[in-house]
Each structure stands twice: as C-alpha cells, then as structure tokens.
Image (cartoon, rainbow, N blue to C red; front, side, top):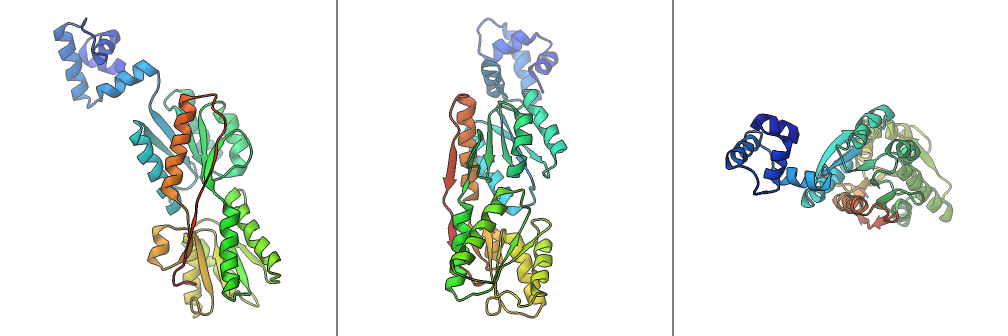
Length: 324
C-alpha cells in the first residue's frame, strides 16, 4: 500500500499524510486523527513510511537464488534476512532457477525503485548477463566468489577446501578418489574440481573419475554414485560438492551392499544439518555469516555508491564424521 492509498482512506491530501508522518504541528487535529486511524486500519508502520519519504528509499532488498530448495542456499538466505532486518530492511526473495527470463522479471523491481539493491546467488558465468540487466544499481554476488570484475562478492576459498578434503582422503590411504560434481557454469564447481585434480597430480594418484550430477539433489547424487560403482576399478572414496549429493551417494553405496567407510569413504560439502543427520564428513561453510556479510557489503554500496569493489573470503571448517 502506498502513501496515496493512506491519503485516500483518510480523505485527505498526500501532503497532509506526509506532514502527519513527519510530526508536523501544522496539521489540524481532526485530519491527524483520520490519518492515524487509516494507518492503523491498514496495519502500516508510520515510521517506515516517514523514512521512505525522507530518503527516497524502499528499504527492500531483492535476493535472487538459483535454487531455494538447496539447504545451503536456504541457510545463506536466513543470514541475509537476519542482517537485513537488523538494519531496518526487508527482503524480497526470487527463486530464479538460473533462468534469465525469471531473473529479468525479478530485476524489473530495480527500475521500479521497489528495491534499493540486489544480492544474487547465481552461476558465475551468468554475471555478464545479469550485469547488463542490473546496470549501476547496488549489487553483491553471494557464495560465488569472483576474483575479478566490478561486483562485490563474498564466499570461501573453494580450491583450498577441496584440496584439503582430497589430501585427507589420500592421507587415510585412499588410492581411488572420485568426484561427484555439478554444473560447471558455477564457479564453485570448477574451483572444487580444480582442487580435486591438483591433489591427484601432486600425490601422483593415477585414478581419476568425475561424474556430473544433473542437479543438487540426493536423487542426482545417487544416480552419479551408481555410475561410479559400475566402473572398474570402483572408487574407494568419493568427494561430492554438496551434502545433498553426498547423501545420495551414501544411499547408492548402501543399496550396492557396500560399507561406508570400510569399502568407500564419502565426503560432502556445505556443512548443512543434513550432514549431521547422516553422520557425513564435510566442509562446513559459514552459510549464515556469508549471508550477513553480503548484506553489509550491499548496504555500504547503497550508502556509498562510489565505494570500491570488495571481495571477502570467509573461513571454512573440515568436520570429520563416521563416513570417513
């Protein structure tokens, strides 16, 4: 509802509503009461409306997520929402599905001044397309770290994290370490694969096998793991680039009558609640902190449009559980 609607409900001018919201003493008592009653009936927040009038801001942030069903993305969004609300902002969530037309529809809110900035969690390869649509509006890329370009971003060092996983598996005597990856249009997928392959090269491990899951679901992880099990020799360890894929791999191994970790060790990525439920060794990302930091970067850009691009690298943690 707009200030115009409040004025209509109260039967006064927009200017009168504005003066009431700004506590002007030039408003007649009768008109003030009518405006306040209309605001109450509409369940509106006078302070927020007044602030919008003073600053010409919406105090809304658009958050575009490629797949809200991904537990990691959901946790990041929780962090975004917590930090936004702490700073007097609300979020509008768009589940883009990595579809440019859905993204275009969501981004129309920018041109309509309905949002003050945008946080994206989308494939790195789509950034040029998004940049053309977003223009010079305040923008932060979240959980897909960009080491170049004009977009501020926050994420982790995916190469280091994946190198640590594969090194730990090799240190444990695993000789045939496979990777279950996802869409290489995402930079994290390319970086985690780079880390995987670099350790195989450094350790002089001849075995290398990569299966690409169709999406980040347990079902896709199960399918990918089944393909790996059908090869000879089969892997004695599997590193999956998400906990959901790793959970599917665990199920496929169980169905094949094999034991984890005796026959095949399994490691996931993200550190979601799912990993704890299935006792999965994983790389824990500070998901909510990533979301909070993205909001801080965005608000700084909103307040200081000429502020330089910032790239923030967060810490990650290796959690060892029963799957290794």
